[in-house]
Image (tube, rainbow over the protein chains, first blue to last red):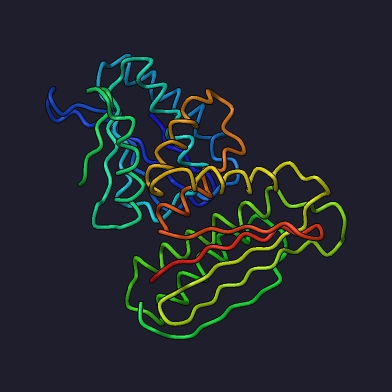
Length: 124
Length: 163
C-alpha cells in the first residue's frame, strides 16, 4: 500500500496488524493540506485505501496528530470519505490531538456525523 | 494574546502559493509577539481561508496588476483580518458571500451554523465546490464576527476576533 504526496501534505500508509482486534489500515497525515483542489488527489486515493480496508475487513484509521494545518477544501474531502466509508460499511476512525485547539475544534464539529459505530472520533 | 496595537497592510499578487506564505507569515509574526500560540494559529487560519476565497473567486480578468488587498490589524483585545478583491458586476459569488453571512445569523451560535454547513456539504454528493464552508469555519473556529461589503466592483470580507 502506497502513500500520497500532495504539495505540502504527505500521507504515509501503514498496515497495523499487531493483533486481530487492533488491525487497521492507517493513514498518517503530516505537513499541511493547503492545495487548491485537494479532492482531485485525495478522492481517488481514498477510494483505493477504502477498497483495501473493505477487502481486509479492517477499519480505516486517519491520524491527524502530526498535521499542521488543513484548509476547508480538505474538510470537504474528509466529509466525502465519511460518506463513502459508511456506504461501504467500513469503519472509519479519525484520530486527532485535542491538545491542539484547532484540531479539537475541527474534529469536535465532525461528531455531527458520528451517528453509528461506523465512525469514531478519537483523541490521541 | 496580550494588548498590543499592530498592523499589516499588503497588496498581494493573486497566486495560490501566496495563501500559505501569508498564512504562515501571520502565524509566525504573531507567535513571535504573543504568547497565545493557539490564538495565533486561529488568526492564521482565518487569514488563509479569506485569502483562498479572494484568489478563487476574485475577478482577475480586468487588470494586469492582479492583486488583492490584505490587512491584519489589532488594538486592545480585538484582531481584524480584511481581504479585498475585485469582482465582476452582478458577481454570483459575491452575492453568495453576503447570503452566507445572512444565513449564519439565523443560527443561535456559530457551532450550530457550522454543523448545518457540514451536513449540507455531505448532502451535496460530489459537488463540493463553492460551498462557503471556509467562511462558516472562520466564524466557528476563529470565534469571529464576519462582515462583508460589496461596493464599486470590490468585495471586502472582514473578520473580527476577540483575542
